[in-house]
Image 1 (cartoon, rainbow, N blue to C red):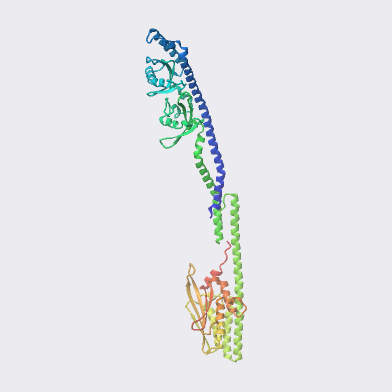
Image 2 (image 1 turned 90 degrees about the vertical axis):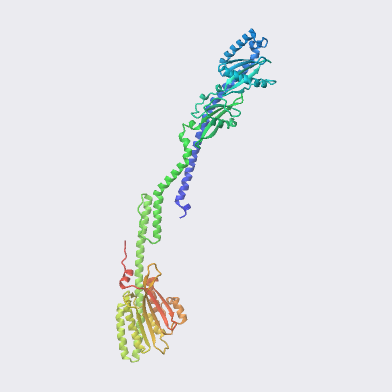
Amino acid sequence: MNFIRSLRFKFIVGLTLIMLPLFMLLYYNNVYAMKVVRDQVSLTNMNHLAKSVEQNERVLQETNRYLYSLGERDPDIISLFFLKYSSGDYIIAKQRIMNKFMTDIGFYNLIDSFFLYDAVNDDLLLATSGNYDVKMSIVQESMPVQMQQLEGEIQKPEWSIVQGGTWNALVKTVRINAQFYAGALVDMNALNHPEQFTESGDRGGAVIVGADGGALSDSALNSAQIKLAAAHITGLNNPYQVISEVTSTGSARQYLMLGIPSAMSEMNYIVLLPEEDMMRNLPFFQQIIRLLPIGAAVILITAMIFLRQLLFRPMNVLIRGMRRVSRGELDVRLETPASSELEFVTHSFNQMTSEIQHLKIDVYEEQLRTREAEFKQLQMQINPHFYLNSLNIIHSLASLQKHELVQQMAGHLADYFRFSLRAGKRVIRLDEELEHISHYLEIQKLRFPNKLDFVLDVEPDLGQYVLPPLTIQPFVENAIIHGFQRRTEPFVICITARKSKTLSDPDPSSVLQLSITDNGVGFEQEILERLQQGQYAEDPGGQHIGIWNVIHRLLVKYGEHAGLQFSNQTEGGAAVHIHMPAQTEEEEGRAYAEPVDRG
């Protein structure tokens, strides 16, 4: 069966075409829902980040203005330029400056330290809210670089990044005059506000990274996450990025990355939000994409199992039943399925096979009756033919006034008529047929004394087998009529009967072989070719009526299991061979006269 043309294949294709748009719609809906969540979460957190960065940048800008105004508005710093170093007035002025810086640190909440550096005397004034020694060390180490950057250049508002071991800070230095430099120090951790990002979860967080990707502030992110974020700094101009981290187990973990570059320094504010925490309100939509192929396969298999039980299996049973009927098995009856539609089809099929079976039986019975009528007609057709020949013989003997031969002829003829009274039966035994032939040949011997003889060569126990009446006689008559001509030596007719096996069928059966041979002139070549080609059947009313009658009776009764062959013997004379099934009267009755079972 062609699978492409089957209902199973068409159903799979049809179900796939129906389910595919639904799954595509579901997939699109899931992707769209996740995109909406990303957009909303990124918008919320970006607003928080932008607000935080804006506050930081504003404080740094105000600090810039504050530092630039020190040289113009602060009299103490201006007076230091004119006071003698380490004098009492100098020290008092420095103290007032220290007090002012401490007061201003409280006003500028992000500023960690203010400082004033005397480049001529290498004197550093530091006001800080943190660890004084650490801040003093950082400022002292960074001042040469800061002063070099300010030498001969227009002062810029950008803040520089300085590192003090594990502590990083922003530093801003301005030149007040040729001797003094003022500046401010900002702790990087003060610029990072991770508590603002409520969607960061346990594995997310915020960090400030430099231009080289290194972390400048403390963060809840691990080094791998910071490195991952640093690799995507170039995409900070996008509203957000979806980046993936490969875990130690080989699975991928996705993050939503937000970032804003600082306008005041070469640093970037980065926020990483884990998607699995961010999507915790959409667990179904998170998993549905992965489960879509499995779900489609489960639905398809379930539908196939359902339809197999409901449709395909009953249809296969129906198809197998039709194939059995096509092979001639008319006793097929199918079980009634549960479906009302298929129940009607199955009932119609069972009814059809029952009607076909009865119709075939009726046709078979009619054929038997027809064959029986034809058989009897053929059987009766041969009798007048023999009667005419017998009367001709008696007429010839009476003309010759051979009264004794006429008496013998009449006796044999009486026995022959007695046999004819039993010849109305379907079959007779072989010994009865041979006895009848003997009477016929004795009659012919009386007609041709010392010129005709016959031999019966029959294997023992073959007389019990049956054959249609008057099967052998027409060939004996033809032998005498056509073979017994212009002879100077006795004409001998030999009738033999043998039994053999045939292996043409899977189950070998017995065959009765009869032969009628003579030592006459044989068949003329033209006539022999016609007989071998079966042309005697073309003219059933002609001179071969006896042969036509015999072969047709054999074919009507035995079909292809019977046959007739003609030939000339090498030593001279004609030969006729007849074969048919070797059956006793009981076996013939079972084979051809069994009562018909009507079911």
